[in-house]
Length: 409
Image 1 (spheres, rainbow, N blue to C red):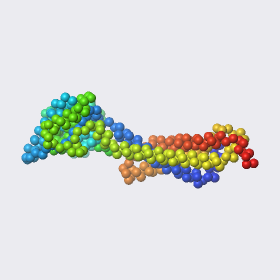
Image 2: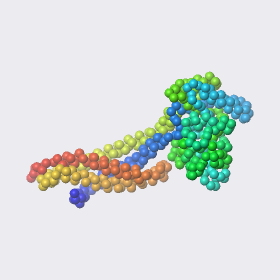
Image 3: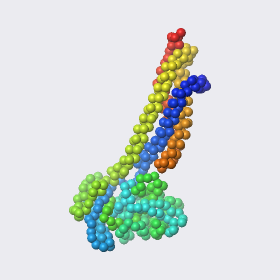
Image 4: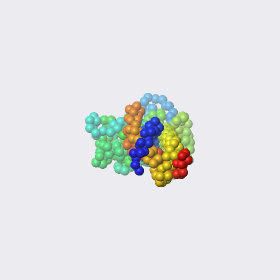
């Protein structure tokens, strides 16, 4: 079909064409960025923590205050922790338990730099620290792909200060420091202190929810942190999670009823807490989805309304064309191509606006760079939407009989 007559016809309706083009462009600019936000949010929410989350329980509490000098207090806190852990491990519904105050996605023990030299002049990476005893890696369920767990005699206790002579690291961290894959047994510097990598886990997500480039760079240190606000992690036996949680609560308070588990602390399933950590992101994705549906619906309604108006105006012209031999498919294609030209123009402008909007969001709200993939999805969505929206009025136009051409004669 010759496009030139369609362009000539569109020039007679400049105002309507410009308005619908701008509407399509604005919708595309917003929808492309919204698609990106939704996709990125879903990707973040579906990231694996590296833990075996089924049956994983974490306990956060405040131990009873004890008196004495600093060294005495530390020893008393450590004795309470060791007694708590032994009581938890002795429960029939518990598979294992470990001391830790850090949990992926929930809270951390701090972070620092892992380097190949003490003064960090060469290669170094940023990492999150998890402090715990020899049971921590197995209780987490992080898969050990090389090396070993800590030995009991390697566990220190005291304040949470990095500097253990042996560490377990995540594979992403190991690969960044040693791209050739020979990280096991290598010496590195943890915030300037020498340590040897004795184990590598496949994955262990950091406590950070952000999109940093070190989201999987984690280090496990053999350190039991002696503070009043302390944490444990326990793994229930298969199918016995509820019983294990009840047993842990009963055992801990039987051992020392003076401990404190206020709101926000206590005994929780890791999976439930993980879901709760993404409530804000889930809400943003849902809001973006609603905005996209509204904008696309309004744009589709605008295309339907404009095409219906033009069909009403051109009733006699359509009848004349039918009388001169135009087929129904010819009339249908005319309106489809007409709207395709309008939607295509709007899509080109909208694609540029989408990139511009993303640059503005990056500057003011630290948003990530918009991949062209999402712009292409937005363009395709607008073109498909325009063709779907024009179909009903265009079919109605194609059904105009040739006799209409003679009614006003």
